[in-house]
Image (cartoon, rainbow, N blue to C red):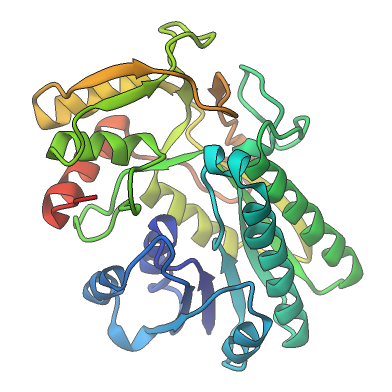
Length: 332
């Protein structure tokens, strides 16, 4: 059995590849290296038997490239390749429609052409209308930003395609905030340039690569004024993909992957400072466009139907992230 992971050298994708190795003989990886590098592949080969990994460098927006990849024997697809920065999506929306929507369309066409019937799709909590209660999968879908909108369009596309093919099996996973790193310290989040996400930003300040952490807003409608998010350890998230693959049935199902517990930006900073046993330089900056007050998951459906639940704590997240940061000697 073989599986294709698009965006498989990215932060989440690499962790999924590690977990897939226990279940699949061959793991095909697509990545265009726009936000990853080949050192991730080198480290994956330390965690996964080398004969299981097949790397294809290319862009999902290229139909000919996808046709060549699907010329291999592929049984299922885990689709993560996407642009994902909320702020960038607001300033460069056409790029997000091109990669996230057109790229997904190309992928589904290639699956159709080669009769590949199993898909796990990486979506986001950003598809939900903002509210403070935990989100269930049946909540109102009203994205506050372009990134969320492109993911919602892709979800709709997958659902419509499934209606046309009774054999097609898909699970859409709406992620909340993936954080942390593999406990080996070999793979973790290492975006290029100045990070958009909180943990790698803290990480770089702690390492001295950046002078200070910008806390984007302290006037949110939350107890301490900073935004609250449902932070899930990336290894727990990867386990969720295995559970999804093992529970595919014809049609489309949707699940939240989160902890159901929220942490504010200030709480995460304090937990990281505890993990490194010192304070970091930080200041309050202006809010970013498109950011919402609170995002919390209700993961009970995944707990019940996929027999999956998150296990790692915020302390685990910060300790694993710091181990990866020190091992990889991250710089901008």
